[in-house]
Amino acid sequence: MSKSLTRLDLNLLFILQLLLQERSVSRAAKTLNVTPSTVSKALAKLRDWFDDPLFVKTPQGFQLTPLAHGMEQELSDWLQMGKQLMAKRGDEMTKGLTFELVLESPLLLIMLNELTQAIYGQYPDAKVKVRNWDYDSLEAIVRGEADMGFTGRESHPRSKESLDLLPYFIDFEVLFTDLPMVYLRHDHPALQEAWNIETFLKYPHINILWEKSDTWALDDVLIELGLSRNIVLTLASFEQFLFMAAKPNHTMLAIAPQYCGQYAQQLHPELVCRPIPIAAEYLDKLAIPFTLIWHKRNSHNPKITWLKHTLKTIYGTKQLR
Image (cartoon, rainbow, N blue to C red; front, side, top):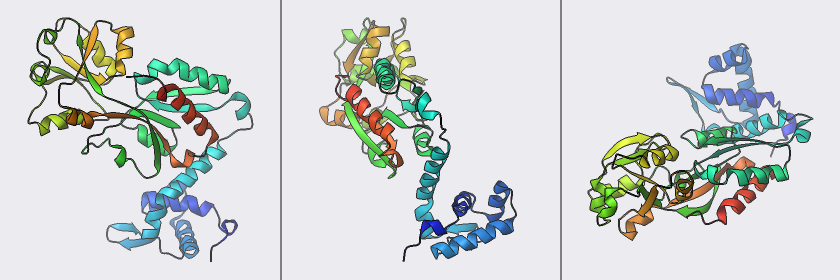
Protein backbone atom coordinates (compact mmCIF):
# COMPACT_ATOMS: atom_id res chain seq x y z
CA MET A 1 0.00 0.00 0.00
CA SER A 2 1.36 3.44 -0.92
CA LYS A 3 2.30 5.78 1.89
CA SER A 4 1.31 9.41 2.18
CA LEU A 5 4.16 11.89 1.76
CA THR A 6 2.67 13.95 4.58
CA ARG A 7 3.82 11.23 7.00
CA LEU A 8 7.47 11.54 5.95
CA ASP A 9 9.87 14.04 7.50
CA LEU A 10 11.25 15.67 4.33
CA ASN A 11 14.52 16.44 6.10
CA LEU A 12 15.20 12.71 5.82
CA LEU A 13 15.39 13.07 2.04
CA PHE A 14 18.18 15.63 2.34
CA ILE A 15 20.07 13.20 4.57
CA LEU A 16 19.43 10.42 2.06
CA GLN A 17 20.87 12.53 -0.75
CA LEU A 18 24.00 13.18 1.30
CA LEU A 19 24.36 9.49 2.05
CA LEU A 20 24.01 8.73 -1.65
CA GLN A 21 26.77 11.24 -2.39
CA GLU A 22 29.15 10.39 0.45
CA ARG A 23 28.53 6.64 0.85
CA SER A 24 29.46 7.20 4.52
CA VAL A 25 27.53 7.98 7.70
CA SER A 26 30.48 9.83 9.25
CA ARG A 27 31.12 12.02 6.19
CA ALA A 28 27.43 12.84 5.84
CA ALA A 29 27.32 13.75 9.55
CA LYS A 30 30.35 16.01 9.14
CA THR A 31 28.72 17.80 6.20
CA LEU A 32 25.52 18.31 8.20
CA ASN A 33 27.47 19.25 11.36
CA VAL A 34 25.63 16.63 13.40
CA THR A 35 26.74 13.44 15.16
CA PRO A 36 27.03 10.14 13.28
CA SER A 37 24.39 8.77 15.63
CA THR A 38 21.89 11.33 14.30
CA VAL A 39 22.54 10.24 10.72
CA SER A 40 22.33 6.55 11.69
CA LYS A 41 18.92 7.13 13.29
CA ALA A 42 17.76 8.95 10.15
CA LEU A 43 18.98 6.07 8.00
CA ALA A 44 17.02 3.61 10.17
CA LYS A 45 13.85 5.67 9.58
CA LEU A 46 14.53 5.77 5.82
CA ARG A 47 15.04 2.01 5.73
CA ASP A 48 11.75 1.53 7.54
CA TRP A 49 9.91 3.94 5.24
CA PHE A 50 11.19 2.37 2.01
CA ASP A 51 11.21 -1.16 3.45
CA ASP A 52 14.69 -1.60 1.99
CA PRO A 53 18.21 -1.53 3.48
CA LEU A 54 19.22 1.15 0.90
CA PHE A 55 22.92 0.70 1.73
CA VAL A 56 24.85 -2.51 2.32
CA LYS A 57 28.10 -2.37 4.28
CA THR A 58 31.08 -3.96 2.51
CA PRO A 59 34.87 -3.84 3.06
CA GLN A 60 34.94 -1.12 0.39
CA GLY A 61 32.26 0.95 2.16
CA PHE A 62 28.54 1.38 1.59
CA GLN A 63 27.13 -0.14 -1.61
CA LEU A 64 23.73 0.95 -2.93
CA THR A 65 20.85 -1.49 -3.16
CA PRO A 66 19.04 -1.59 -6.52
CA LEU A 67 16.26 0.59 -5.05
CA ALA A 68 18.69 3.24 -3.79
CA HIS A 69 20.57 3.22 -7.08
CA GLY A 70 17.32 3.55 -9.03
CA MET A 71 16.09 6.62 -7.16
CA GLU A 72 19.46 8.44 -6.90
CA GLN A 73 18.93 10.65 -9.97
CA GLU A 74 15.21 11.15 -9.32
CA LEU A 75 15.91 12.31 -5.77
CA SER A 76 18.55 14.73 -7.04
CA ASP A 77 16.07 16.14 -9.58
CA TRP A 78 13.32 16.46 -6.98
CA LEU A 79 15.55 18.32 -4.54
CA GLN A 80 16.86 20.57 -7.32
CA MET A 81 13.29 21.58 -8.16
CA GLY A 82 12.69 22.26 -4.48
CA LYS A 83 15.81 24.39 -4.34
CA GLN A 84 14.63 26.44 -7.32
CA LEU A 85 11.20 26.88 -5.71
CA MET A 86 12.65 28.00 -2.38
CA ALA A 87 14.95 30.48 -4.16
CA LYS A 88 12.00 32.45 -5.52
CA ARG A 89 11.28 35.86 -3.98
CA GLY A 90 8.12 37.85 -3.70
CA ASP A 91 9.47 40.53 -6.01
CA GLU A 92 10.78 38.16 -8.67
CA MET A 93 7.94 38.44 -11.14
CA THR A 94 7.92 42.24 -11.03
CA LYS A 95 11.63 42.29 -11.86
CA GLY A 96 11.37 39.58 -14.50
CA LEU A 97 12.78 36.16 -15.14
CA THR A 98 16.37 35.08 -15.69
CA PHE A 99 17.24 33.03 -18.76
CA GLU A 100 20.42 30.95 -18.38
CA LEU A 101 21.55 29.70 -21.79
CA VAL A 102 24.55 27.73 -23.06
CA LEU A 103 24.80 28.15 -26.83
CA GLU A 104 27.34 27.24 -29.45
CA SER A 105 29.29 30.17 -30.81
CA PRO A 106 29.37 31.73 -33.38
CA LEU A 107 25.84 30.41 -34.02
CA LEU A 108 24.56 32.41 -31.06
CA LEU A 109 26.23 35.58 -32.35
CA ILE A 110 24.49 35.37 -35.73
CA MET A 111 21.03 35.69 -34.18
CA LEU A 112 21.66 36.75 -30.58
CA ASN A 113 20.05 40.12 -31.16
CA GLU A 114 16.90 38.53 -32.56
CA LEU A 115 16.73 36.09 -29.64
CA THR A 116 17.20 38.72 -26.93
CA GLN A 117 14.68 41.04 -28.55
CA ALA A 118 12.13 38.21 -28.55
CA ILE A 119 12.83 37.57 -24.85
CA TYR A 120 12.56 41.24 -23.90
CA GLY A 121 9.40 41.59 -26.00
CA GLN A 122 7.73 38.82 -24.00
CA TYR A 123 9.42 39.53 -20.64
CA PRO A 124 10.44 43.22 -20.58
CA ASP A 125 12.37 42.95 -17.30
CA ALA A 126 14.09 39.66 -18.08
CA LYS A 127 17.79 39.06 -17.45
CA VAL A 128 19.63 36.97 -20.03
CA LYS A 129 22.87 35.13 -19.25
CA VAL A 130 24.58 33.41 -22.17
CA ARG A 131 27.65 31.18 -22.00
CA ASN A 132 29.48 29.38 -24.78
CA TRP A 133 28.79 25.66 -24.98
CA ASP A 134 31.75 23.70 -23.62
CA TYR A 135 32.59 20.32 -22.12
CA ASP A 136 30.82 21.17 -18.84
CA SER A 137 27.59 22.56 -20.33
CA LEU A 138 25.60 19.33 -20.22
CA GLU A 139 26.43 18.97 -16.53
CA ALA A 140 25.32 22.59 -16.00
CA ILE A 141 21.92 21.67 -17.46
CA VAL A 142 21.74 18.61 -15.20
CA ARG A 143 22.68 20.67 -12.13
CA GLY A 144 20.03 23.29 -12.93
CA GLU A 145 22.61 26.00 -13.61
CA ALA A 146 21.43 26.40 -17.22
CA ASP A 147 17.88 26.38 -18.57
CA MET A 148 18.68 25.17 -22.06
CA GLY A 149 21.54 24.45 -24.43
CA PHE A 150 21.79 24.75 -28.20
CA THR A 151 24.71 23.04 -29.90
CA GLY A 152 25.84 20.75 -32.66
CA ARG A 153 26.17 17.02 -32.03
CA GLU A 154 27.65 14.35 -34.31
CA SER A 155 26.19 11.64 -36.56
CA HIS A 156 29.16 9.28 -36.78
CA PRO A 157 28.09 5.97 -35.17
CA ARG A 158 31.24 5.84 -33.01
CA SER A 159 31.10 9.45 -31.88
CA LYS A 160 30.99 10.26 -28.17
CA GLU A 161 28.82 13.26 -29.10
CA SER A 162 26.02 11.19 -30.62
CA LEU A 163 22.47 12.11 -29.64
CA ASP A 164 21.93 8.45 -28.77
CA LEU A 165 24.41 8.82 -25.90
CA LEU A 166 22.61 11.67 -24.14
CA PRO A 167 21.42 10.62 -20.65
CA TYR A 168 17.84 9.38 -20.36
CA PHE A 169 16.90 12.37 -18.19
CA ILE A 170 17.84 14.82 -20.97
CA ASP A 171 15.25 15.88 -23.57
CA PHE A 172 16.28 17.25 -26.96
CA GLU A 173 14.97 18.36 -30.33
CA VAL A 174 16.96 18.75 -33.55
CA LEU A 175 16.24 22.10 -35.23
CA PHE A 176 18.35 21.71 -38.36
CA THR A 177 21.18 19.60 -39.74
CA ASP A 178 24.35 21.14 -41.13
CA LEU A 179 27.49 19.88 -42.85
CA PRO A 180 31.10 20.90 -42.19
CA MET A 181 32.82 22.95 -44.87
CA VAL A 182 36.43 23.86 -45.63
CA TYR A 183 37.29 27.55 -45.14
CA LEU A 184 40.35 29.06 -46.82
CA ARG A 185 41.54 32.42 -48.15
CA HIS A 186 40.42 33.42 -51.63
CA ASP A 187 44.10 33.44 -52.71
CA HIS A 188 44.94 30.04 -51.19
CA PRO A 189 47.04 27.89 -53.58
CA ALA A 190 44.66 24.93 -53.13
CA LEU A 191 42.10 26.85 -55.20
CA GLN A 192 44.41 26.62 -58.20
CA GLU A 193 44.42 22.81 -58.00
CA ALA A 194 41.84 20.10 -58.58
CA TRP A 195 39.63 20.06 -55.49
CA ASN A 196 39.93 16.46 -54.32
CA ILE A 197 40.95 14.49 -51.24
CA GLU A 198 44.63 14.66 -52.21
CA THR A 199 44.55 18.47 -52.35
CA PHE A 200 42.51 18.62 -49.14
CA LEU A 201 45.09 16.56 -47.23
CA LYS A 202 48.13 18.11 -48.92
CA TYR A 203 47.84 21.31 -46.86
CA PRO A 204 48.12 21.75 -43.07
CA HIS A 205 44.94 22.05 -41.01
CA ILE A 206 43.73 24.27 -38.18
CA ASN A 207 41.66 22.30 -35.69
CA ILE A 208 39.28 23.09 -32.83
CA LEU A 209 39.38 21.64 -29.32
CA TRP A 210 35.77 20.52 -28.89
CA GLU A 211 34.58 19.32 -25.48
CA LYS A 212 38.15 18.38 -24.51
CA SER A 213 38.69 16.38 -27.71
CA ASP A 214 41.03 17.39 -30.51
CA THR A 215 39.59 14.89 -33.00
CA TRP A 216 36.07 14.55 -34.35
CA ALA A 217 33.98 12.59 -36.84
CA LEU A 218 36.04 13.69 -39.85
CA ASP A 219 39.13 12.09 -38.36
CA ASP A 220 37.20 8.85 -37.77
CA VAL A 221 36.07 8.85 -41.41
CA LEU A 222 39.61 9.47 -42.66
CA ILE A 223 40.85 6.56 -40.53
CA GLU A 224 38.26 4.34 -42.25
CA LEU A 225 39.82 5.45 -45.56
CA GLY A 226 43.36 4.85 -44.31
CA LEU A 227 44.08 8.60 -44.32
CA SER A 228 44.78 11.36 -41.81
CA ARG A 229 45.10 15.13 -41.59
CA ASN A 230 48.21 17.13 -40.77
CA ILE A 231 46.91 19.24 -37.86
CA VAL A 232 49.46 21.94 -37.09
CA LEU A 233 47.37 24.35 -34.99
CA THR A 234 44.59 23.64 -32.48
CA LEU A 235 42.46 26.49 -31.10
CA ALA A 236 39.56 26.83 -28.67
CA SER A 237 36.74 28.19 -30.85
CA PHE A 238 35.41 28.54 -34.38
CA GLU A 239 35.90 32.30 -34.16
CA GLN A 240 39.58 31.86 -33.39
CA PHE A 241 40.34 29.48 -36.20
CA LEU A 242 38.33 31.37 -38.81
CA PHE A 243 40.31 34.43 -37.74
CA MET A 244 43.56 32.54 -38.26
CA ALA A 245 42.44 30.99 -41.55
CA ALA A 246 41.83 34.49 -42.92
CA LYS A 247 45.37 35.68 -42.10
CA PRO A 248 47.92 35.93 -44.94
CA ASN A 249 51.27 34.18 -45.38
CA HIS A 250 50.24 30.62 -44.53
CA THR A 251 48.54 27.68 -46.28
CA MET A 252 46.41 26.31 -43.45
CA LEU A 253 42.82 25.15 -43.95
CA ALA A 254 39.98 25.32 -41.38
CA ILE A 255 36.81 23.24 -41.17
CA ALA A 256 33.62 24.62 -39.60
CA PRO A 257 29.86 24.14 -39.99
CA GLN A 258 28.37 25.64 -43.14
CA TYR A 259 26.35 28.18 -41.12
CA CYS A 260 29.67 29.81 -40.16
CA GLY A 261 29.72 31.21 -43.70
CA GLN A 262 27.32 33.93 -42.54
CA TYR A 263 29.67 34.84 -39.70
CA ALA A 264 32.69 34.78 -42.04
CA GLN A 265 30.96 37.02 -44.60
CA GLN A 266 30.56 39.72 -41.95
CA LEU A 267 34.01 39.56 -40.33
CA HIS A 268 36.28 37.69 -42.76
CA PRO A 269 35.08 38.40 -46.33
CA GLU A 270 38.46 37.19 -47.65
CA LEU A 271 37.46 33.60 -46.79
CA VAL A 272 35.74 31.26 -49.21
CA CYS A 273 34.41 27.77 -48.49
CA ARG A 274 34.50 24.48 -50.29
CA PRO A 275 32.86 21.12 -49.53
CA ILE A 276 34.94 18.38 -47.95
CA PRO A 277 35.91 16.31 -51.02
CA ILE A 278 34.80 12.82 -49.98
CA ALA A 279 32.03 10.50 -51.17
CA ALA A 280 28.43 11.18 -50.13
CA GLU A 281 28.27 7.96 -48.11
CA TYR A 282 30.96 9.36 -45.81
CA LEU A 283 29.49 12.87 -45.75
CA ASP A 284 26.39 11.42 -44.09
CA LYS A 285 28.60 10.47 -41.13
CA LEU A 286 29.73 14.11 -40.84
CA ALA A 287 26.22 15.58 -40.60
CA ILE A 288 25.84 17.92 -37.61
CA PRO A 289 22.37 17.89 -35.98
CA PHE A 290 22.00 21.26 -34.23
CA THR A 291 19.99 20.45 -31.16
CA LEU A 292 18.04 22.06 -28.33
CA ILE A 293 18.87 20.32 -25.04
CA TRP A 294 17.07 20.62 -21.70
CA HIS A 295 16.41 18.56 -18.57
CA LYS A 296 13.21 16.52 -18.35
CA ARG A 297 12.30 18.26 -15.11
CA ASN A 298 11.81 21.45 -17.18
CA SER A 299 9.63 19.85 -19.86
CA HIS A 300 6.47 21.50 -18.52
CA ASN A 301 8.04 24.69 -17.22
CA PRO A 302 6.18 27.58 -18.98
CA LYS A 303 9.38 29.62 -19.35
CA ILE A 304 11.20 26.70 -21.00
CA THR A 305 8.21 25.88 -23.22
CA TRP A 306 8.11 29.47 -24.45
CA LEU A 307 11.90 29.59 -24.93
CA LYS A 308 11.89 26.33 -26.90
CA HIS A 309 9.15 27.61 -29.21
CA THR A 310 11.01 30.91 -29.71
CA LEU A 311 14.32 29.23 -30.53
CA LYS A 312 12.55 26.92 -32.97
CA THR A 313 10.97 29.94 -34.66
CA ILE A 314 14.24 31.86 -34.94
CA TYR A 315 16.68 29.08 -35.79
CA GLY A 316 14.53 26.32 -37.18
CA THR A 317 12.82 28.29 -39.95
CA LYS A 318 15.86 30.14 -41.27
CA GLN A 319 18.24 29.02 -43.99
CA LEU A 320 21.43 28.89 -41.94
CA ARG A 321 23.16 26.64 -44.41
